[in-house]
Length: 506
Image (cartoon, rainbow, N blue to C red; front, side):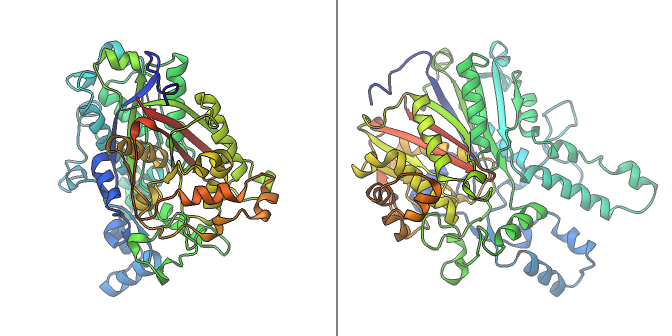
């Protein structure tokens, strides 16, 4: 690993992380939960559905039985993860609103996704005392050289549009209806860049601010943008991550769930027959059946090693490279949900090339944080692609597969960043947490299916595929020597977009 781990002032490093997820209010707590194989998944309740009372009222449902039937018919038997934000951050019914202080006096944080990002961002800010030294704002000499990209998927905009619609439906039918509608500030929550925009204004970041949107690869694209900006000299510091609220919004959750329940779709909801809500998502078992949404937010801070030295910060890891590509699903006769293993294998090969890694000569341990979305096609794409690219490492029993979605749900925008943060915690603690819900990797992965190989026009031998499958720990943890580990993290977004990153301990 010496050739990979050479320290240099121009190395791009991660110096701080922050997250909020159903398994913990920060990265350390989430890692502890993962080591104990605890998940945050559970059955949803009416409290998880914003505006449930108003929706019931609009529908004319007044009795307890009617309201119970309404919830049961729309959300009953469904699982997810909501309710991450502490109560003190929600609007005060008396009129105080969200916490103030982001813009001029009286303006407020708007939207659950923004609030989640704020909590994750604050964790990084507390760890960067030499960067945020001017009453909590970034140093003036670094402000213009600092960028922020906080990804969003669907939850943010739908949440705010739904809130505005409910407000409109419940308002009186008089002149004030046209004058007051929209004054609640919902537009600030709806716009995709508002997490990044409000944080930039709050913290004094003056460089580029944006929001990547590539479904579950979104924060991977945020990391891609930040890494490339630093590498190109367009920025010295990058705050990147993602925040999502897919459980709360009615339109988001219902549309995703019902779309994927269609016959032949990614979600069958057969898990009720044999496992409880806390294990609703299995990534690689034969019983994997798809989408279980979860709220989460994560932020990482990247910079050049020389900037870290200037700020007297000890890096957590070095980022060797970040890559992204698009699967050509139409070329292989697949849907946008399926993606292709060929495209994912090409991404891994591109990442290795960008990072200067000769995988054939690599002799350390490879820890691969997989997307692990829990769909039938997704597992095939990921494990076959890993076998094609990392087969030699796996056959030598140096491959470990990991992932966070079984614990925190299908988080959309922050998916890749949550994997990155989990990987950093694993390197810090010297232990990789195994999957909490997959009891046994699907036996179908013991042999390469010739039909899959023919359809995808790719060569994968059965020994490599079996070795990759055998490298996935189920309900057990794996001790690692962090000084001799290469971490690869991948994300696959709906629509065929992929992102990946490579890291080592600095």
